[in-house]
Image 1 (tube, rainbow over the protein chains, first blue to last red):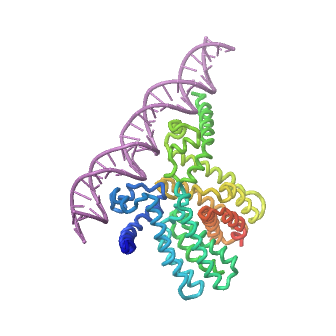
Image 2: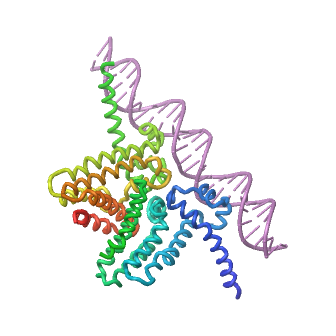
Length: 196
Length: 196
DNA sequence: AATGCTGTACCGAACGTTCGGTATTGACCG
DNA sequence: CGGTCAATACCGAACGTTCGGTACAGCATT
């Protein structure tokens, strides 16, 4: 009884690290095919796990997998994207640094955003809370940088939204036209557009 | 034999009008659920036709339905959205008029874009050519208005792309945050942003 | 011996699609 | 005008496949 917390912590850490190793292929699947387009067969093939093993690691099925991916994505946002905004340098430098990491995450315009993918189909209502909070944190972090740089608060929030709009929109257009340069160009110009 | 052409014309017009009447519910389904998220049962329910009857009007199955929707959408783009750019008035007036019609088509930010929905999942490769051409025509029409207004050609094209990026991006963000005002605000400011 | 993990086999349900057949229509002809 | 006939519109039932999910037995590690 007294060791229950320790045991749980040990189990959890082992389980979570195991789970974490399946996040990259899961993320790739859900962002490219959307929730409804991903079948357990595809997941089994991508992860190398049989159906039974999938339900061992993710007892909640597909929903459990998506939730795990979103949790990991939230972690990545804090540790990598928003972390780039916290370090030293003026606003332009910080935003550029974030832009570089964002560009990597989207394979420079070749891979869609899972947040957009999950806004479609039967997944919309299920995962909207997590998606919403993630985007709001993102916007707030960008706005904070601009406000610290002396920008009017209201304008800074609008610019934060504009940043996400530019990222999401250019991602869609780049993929629809099969021209990743559209995304790259948008990302390159983004910091200046925001600080202007 | 001599009357064959007349008969065909009569048949064709009847068939196409029948097909056309099913376009609105089909468009609504595919834009909200994406290609993989739409099942024939949903289509049957939305159109009021039995599963088997669907194959009478769309022998090619789901792909046939999407292709029909895209053809109708192309028609709408020419007759309604781009037509708003051709009438009289300066660039700002023309773009505002187009923005109004676009806003209506997306239910003022409540409904997603089928072009973005079809860029995901198994539909991506199948329909990319039609989606690509549609978007290119759209961009070209916007750029043409700006060029006619005296804008540098290269800049005008970039602004045309920026317009689509703003529309698509704000649509995604508005739906993800469940706040259609984001889309409305973006659309209201768009004409000025483009002409600036 | 017990636990974590996996492969195999399997389930009912839903999938997209096809087939056979029945109303309904509309053009043609007596 | 009434009757004939082929084309069209539609549907119920079933096809084989795949879906998400489960039960269970065996393997490995401890």
